[in-house]
Amino acid sequence: MPQAPVEHNERLSLRIAAEDKSILMRAAALEHTHLTDFVISKVVSAARQVIEQHERLELTERDSLHVLKLLEEPPAPNARLSAAAFALPKKR
Image (tube, rainbow, N blue to C red):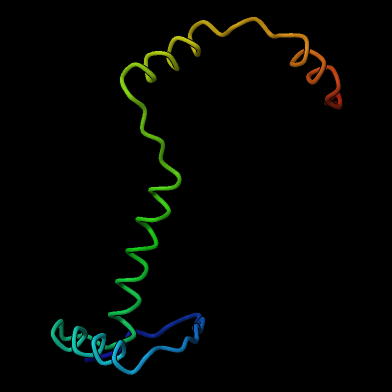
């Protein structure tokens, strides 16, 4: 299988149990790919899912409507918010 040239070859070293490596090698062989390509594709996919789960916030319909209402009709600033805004450095 021809390899595409790599501009930047970042390395990641890790220790893995022999049994786990055998499983990964078998899975990579079943998908007709190199072990490195197999591991990278699976791990990057899993990492993207983890990031999405932590960065995405799902609201109920009630909460969504509440947020939209606050955006359309924001409450008046309280004393602490006014003081914080006043304390900000002035832009030139």
